[in-house]
Image (cartoon, rainbow, N blue to C red):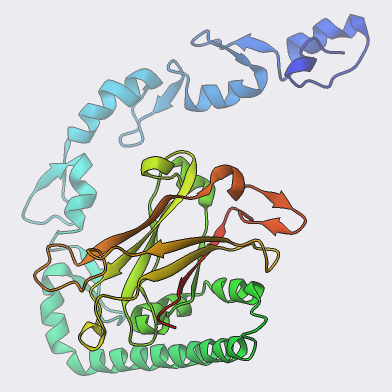
Length: 353
């Protein structure tokens, strides 16, 4: 067996062949880079030479000058990026530093761009206004065509939404979260478009899917939902989620906050808003063992947001310790919260429904 078996090598052979294997074939044997003399496993050497070795010869990606990586990626690149180059469109500005070329092209008056209305014409940026004014009828026709397509798509989606709602209404006693999760998996562009145009269609109970959970934990990222309403023509709010935790739950728990927003129906509603909301972490393989957190909204936090408020939303704290990392990773034949690197949360307004 190979001396590097603990590193992972699975070679087996005669003892007299072992030296030859180590010197020429074993991918786990440490060898010297013949350029910078660093010691690495043989399997890592090719990547080291091509991407890391400071003494490997490479070409500058801007001007094709050759040299050692430590020189090209250091001193040479700094000078190369500062080198003035003529505008690729030969505009009146003359020349710009190489590092600013792309930013300049986004403003250059002679850069060829496509018409904002989607026609196939490309015109210099400085002539865009003239082009727009000279093709009003064509642009109106294109805009109408796009609007008609959007309305058709929204109507198709709304038909599906109402069918889902009717299905859930007919099964209120045995409400199955699996069907809710299925509905939440709609990730088409049509759904996203409808949520922007008709935000009032999202009302409690609202189920939301958080994907790429492990990356959000590593990056300590804040995730927040699209706005939704407590009920039809109700209070507007959204959910904040800290997968890596915050405050007392930082690093140990999933933290969840609910934020109240200024809504279009505030003049019709009763204030302060109802005191009780629930947030539910859904079990993805069974309609049981869901995790709940009850929100008791403080008197100061549940009053109406006015136009004079500096911020047009306010947080209603549930708890930084909504669910622990250990509980979140529980996996049993009947329970799985974090599945396929995603979780499902549901917000329920108990007093408004």
